[in-house]
Image (tube, rainbow, N blue to C red; front, side, top):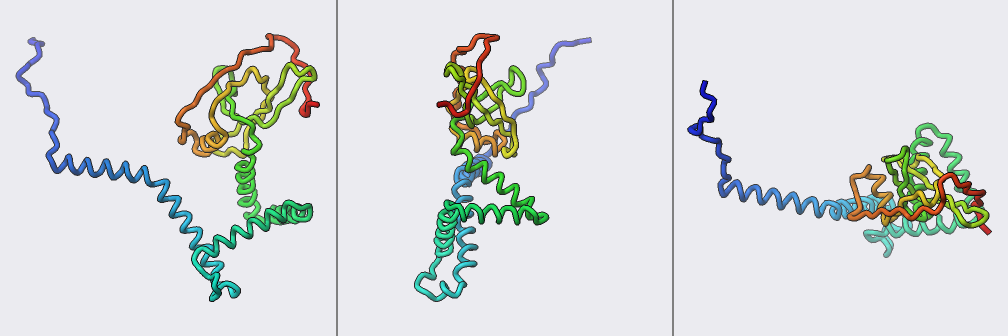
Length: 237
């Protein structure tokens, strides 16, 4: 049996696209690239226009606005900003905070509404709490060889001042309102240059939106293995 390769068999040739096909491919590629680049801006403009239009539709027909000199497009948004400011002033007082607690307690007992209100309240609380995150760190979690991202929310100091434990909140993805809390020796943390804003965006996107750059560094370990660390205080004097 002759097993030699037959060189007479013609090899299939890749079809070369004609001019019309090249023009079509070029147009489709550039159009898609432009759409992907402008999509965030267009979506932002659409959402702002949508919100302003609906707020105006609620505010402008009011008797003390309709037909007056201040009846113009955008007055609804101005009215909402003023309301937010007044509520902010209200909750800065003891009476206002008490009223808000009563309001939350009342909504928390209404079926269906309590579920939506509770979930929204948790998400808003998390978004506001990023101001209290001192920094973003990585630590070995849940086992050695695997690192997880967390937020440092506090610190406990030894009475001698030689050591500190970092209180790290490790959020779950994509629901960061639940997570784990760990007390970690500062020497065991991996420092990073990721900002809190980028970290929150990374969590909500499930890892899809990544920062352009990310650096990790482990600081030199000072504590010796097996050494008693000591008693810690959360409010050092």
